[in-house]
Image (tube, rainbow, N blue to C red; front, top):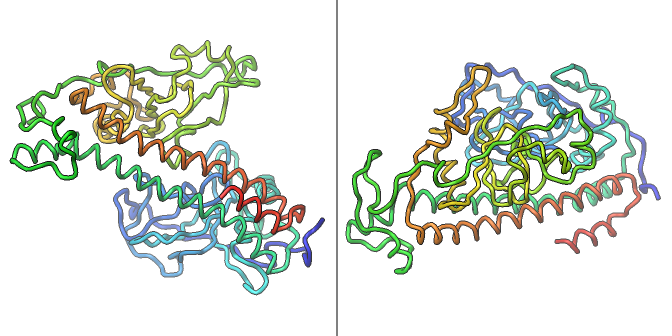
Length: 448
């Protein structure tokens, strides 16, 4: 059954797509300024905006007013630097980020609606997430290594335009799923911030030890938990440390292993593979520090070619090159390629402690990296990094609290993945008219 009151249309009948401004490289900053430069990296695979703390590009300099984006603006990525052309042509709606203005960069198109009484912005967003639109953009893309599209190619896409009320109903139904996904992400940022704060307070700033050394009760701790912290400091090579805590190196307190890539032209290693095999690219796609699936799978024969084998769930993964610094916990058993240092927490240190320790010591890790073409931290350079080892009882207490937060984060990710799959199943059926909005709404209500 087709859409009621629909009519043939091309995107160019409804919108105009405008290139952004070529902001000068000398104004680019890694530290935060009031201006965030919107880049293709801010577009999620499948559509949508993603904010990447610590990996954003900011701008300091003069900014033309017409290239400052407003919350709710519809934008589209016009250039894709990835080998797989992951995000070319995908849309995003500009979010409101407190204290930041987003800039319309030259690699991004701004989509302006000609007549908002004819089409709805959120409907256009979902239309530009559809498989049919995506296939046409990829088919018309230019460039060999770096892929490009153009306003004229985007505007040429033809489709059946439903009536405005139907557009709004479709957008409302799909938005309900995206809003729940966005809520889960905000919850996870809060959960992660709590875990980071707890680690820093206990094991970096030593707040409970400082309090006890000054005769005060540690803030927010039960008597039982406070008793696990010493009440004084002792001298060590790196300065005062809590009395009784050990100074070791990470290679003695956890098992450090690497991985490899079985021959990619050998079907026996890949065809119908069932074991997860992770690359830094998989981690670059994560918005939360838990790995639940991988883009590629390997067979038993492929797994046999990797000396570290199938690493257990709970292993801490650190990308060791291109770039250094992606960190996640494996939520499923996985093998790794050569772009990782994997930390198996099978000795004194639990994995939530190690994960936070890695993030806290990223500067030291990067400083120990070598390489000419690109920076890389080897296992031999990683193993001697010093680590402060608290008492076993305190590590157990930290793991219990941090793991509770991490489990909630992981459940939110699993739910968001299920919601995204439902959205992606509903999208083509709603756009084609195969599924009516009331039926889709019932499916959404059932899962929410």
